[in-house]
Image 1: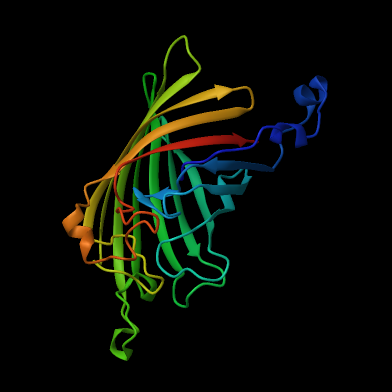
Image 2: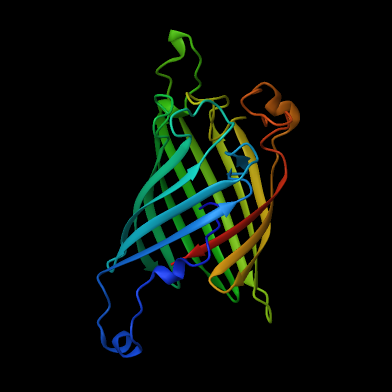
Length: 271
């Protein structure tokens, strides 16, 4: 979902289980997985959510043997719009995974929340993802469609602007493959957003210029329980396209666009 990092030692929190118990105990109906991460920049669909600064992230997912799952993921935010409150994104999600052919179909919904922030900022986004493998390459294609809702509409301080509702469509594809003889995994991402141009109630938007593309190329390296990552992230949002969104759409450090190219570093761990 996001670029993540995790702290060393998370695996030490897991209870030790004798080998014979692993061989004889029946599979559990519920499993819990999670991750913690530190990233040099939190990029959501190519655009910085942390003013090109570091972010601490983490999440938990509970999965039932039937394929049903639910979970939460969170990150700190900074510098984009007027989040207010805790300057935090808290995502709640649930869905169902089922095998389809040689792959997996994943249907679910994410509820994006900004606790304590500006009003009318939370929104829901259903998604469908299809994943599988082609030789040594893992592939994923996804569609996320957020129906019309106030958080995605343009916003100003005039009474006539309140109550606007817009929708948003996001299409994306991911690919990854291990590099033989190394602990490295190459990864790539391409996405396309189409929605309402302008800024929403919290000074942000999931498609700030109406429609744009984002992409990522990177490498992950597994070092013990930790994964080290580096990725080049960019969008096709031009300086001219973003100019009318300033100052919300610029870095508070130097005025550069938060949709400009960036190399993102991460350290992550999962359990």
